[in-house]
Image 1: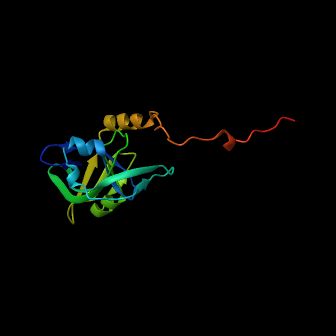
Image 2: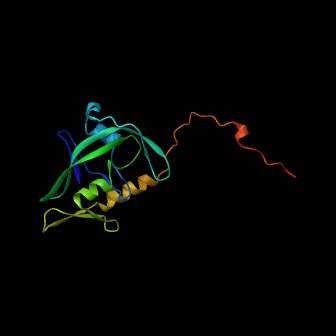
Image 3: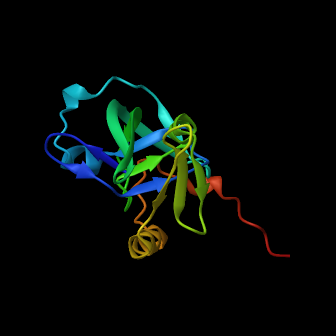
Amino acid sequence: MAVDNETSSSKRFFVDQGSLTDILLYSTFEKMQLTKASLTLCKGDLVGFPGERVNVRGAIWLRTMFDSQPKVKTIDVKYLVINIPNPYDMILGRSSLNTIGAVVSTPHLAVKFPISEIEVNVLHADQKEAQWCYKECLKPRMAEPRNELISPQAFPRVKDK
């Protein structure tokens, strides 16, 4: 899979069948030399499974190619742009997977999708790259500093008997 523009290409995707949206990391947005003017205003937060909230910087439509040469399927994908530390460039969610009619096999690191009425394309991930990304995701991240102060009265003490 690849997202191309005139200046660069991005190929490190995380296929997330549980995600409702397609996500472009802000670091990738900058690497692709896209301008902030190309972002569509998108107010709100993205809420993850553990309830963590991430501010959405905007949305952008990008041409996305699903290919294993010579077979290519290209669609326009609306990505939400967020700024979080992540080893992946993009997260491909259910929306795009459903659009191309994809079937995902996690144990095989593969995605199958039809490219015509009689042909099915299979994309395989690079196992070493997938292992590296997985290990990077497991590394502890430094928590962002909180601006709020918690009063000592918020934690009542238990009296000894």
